[in-house]
Length: 493
Image 1 (tube, helix red, strand yellow):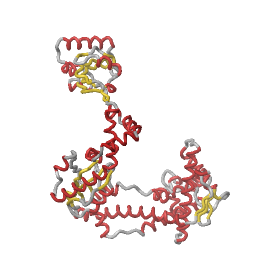
Image 2 (cartoon, rainbow, N blue to C red; image 1 turned 90 degrees about the vertical axis):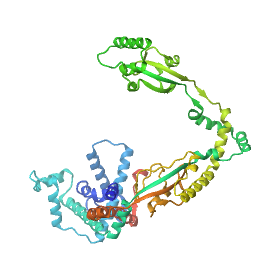
Image 3 (cartoon, rainbow, N blue to C red; image 1 turned 120 degrees about the vertical axis):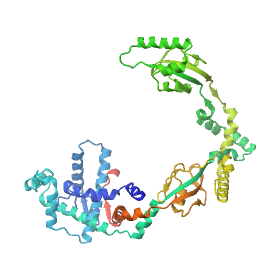
Image 4 (cartoon, rainbow, N blue to C red; image 1 turned 45 degrees about the vertical axis):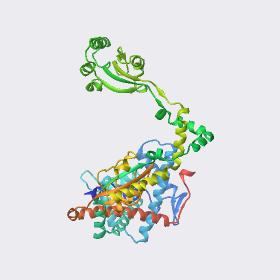
């Protein structure tokens, strides 16, 4: 079933949706088509055939009617550009249908007319009265409408002709099934450059030189990482009992009285955790009201002063955004800031190490690869040196590898997709901010009996996929080879 799931994840080609899906309705109800009708200024020419502003305006008018919303000028220009592109594509296809000798008989026109629900009575029968009334409503004559319908049928025939030119052999189908349905179990080690920065040799003289030459860039790096590396907000270990003030039917006076009872119980020796479990309406109640260590910016501003004034003690009741709240404060850690002067050499060393870490990390990765191949297993000591670990995600399809944690490394995906047997993969694979060494642990072959049972359905799905790809490329080729002159571009007026 992996093949079917993979196919279902593929989207239909935009061209198939625009041209062979929407074109029939566009022809019938919007009035597209270069043949017949009034002509004024040419907005484009396709192999000498003119597409006029009358056609563009007709489409824009009908689209505006159908959408019903007022659009600004930019939206209208984008819409007009899309309409012109569609008109050009449609004209190219109409000329191709003429070139291939596609014909549409009057009988086919009649059959299609009878299928259109807008022209049918409640019992499903074609009505000449409804036909003429609807044509009048959209401003079309019978002759023009039927010409457009003839063109839309021709395009349907052209699509069928193009689709029928695509085939898939049994051998190709089986090969594709094996590729998509084969599963691999892959183990890998990601080696981030940051893990090896400390191992990059940097001379003290080089650090001194950088400080002397570019002190400002070091200060900028310090400020950039200040909150992450060089500053710690004060924290407090907290437990809480919360009585919410937004509970319907309970006054603030009643809540205050209840909170005073809880405070009295705590001061009388009752266990605060038990009180929290019994009375608190905070989610932390199940854990005895424990909030853990909270940094000052994480605490409700209304409670900050009371909390940091009561280390290893209990606060008075505080009205916070959540309600009426009582806190038991444990240990408090003071604010800590590391001065720039104390870390400027570390910052300079890090910047210099960044310049050479690629070489050091590359050499380490190559050594890890060689050791893994020699031992047949990841070398524990080498991994522990930099606190690295082996990751083994769930099995993945060979035809479309997905290995979380690898950063989508293109080289790794290609190697996994072409693996023919289990073993350590050749080469070190680049990924964002580091490198990867990997091994295929298990290759699980697909169930070919299931393939035979579902062969017809799989063929239909694959054939449809191949047809969409072919149609998109074919249409693009037709447009690219046509002599197209666009006189009007709404996006570049």
